[in-house]
Length: 175
Ligand code: DAT
Image (cartoon, rainbow, N blue to C red; front, side):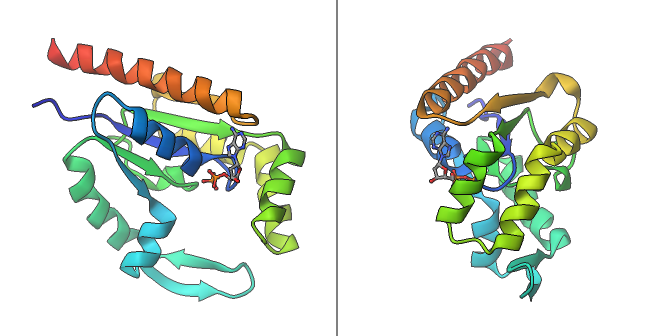
């Protein structure tokens, strides 16, 4: 049986990674296991310490990558994380970077109850295209695609586009 592709969905927190990953997993023509890496880290206790100031966990990347390697080697995975550059270059078949207008992003993060400092930091990162730069410098240009994620129309069109890509990928894998 053909293994499914490995798709990284990345972007600044709040751009819509989990929303996209869930819809994609439910509509994909081949089974895709959605790994929300932040949740995975918490569930498996793969962090070194909790940073009170930033209210984030410092991730034990070595342990995380060792565990993910096993899952990724099976194929058919969506890796949903904002730190895309941590993944080895050989892992993804497609890297999707989601983009969102910063004022929209601000209100999404506010609704999430993030402290002001964390909202500001993420907002700045989105304006500076930090995740996009990381993706472009970590993976071959031909597998990196950036998609707008501001409206539900964007969401549906993006997922449809990724499904089109998966269908083509499955065709190519048969050859
Ligand atoms: P992330 O996983 O990148 O942190 P999310 O999927 O949890 O982001 O989405 C954050 C919020 O924004 C959530 O309330 C859903 C909403 N959202 C995400 N993408 C959207 C889109 N394309 N259109 C409208 N709302 C969206």
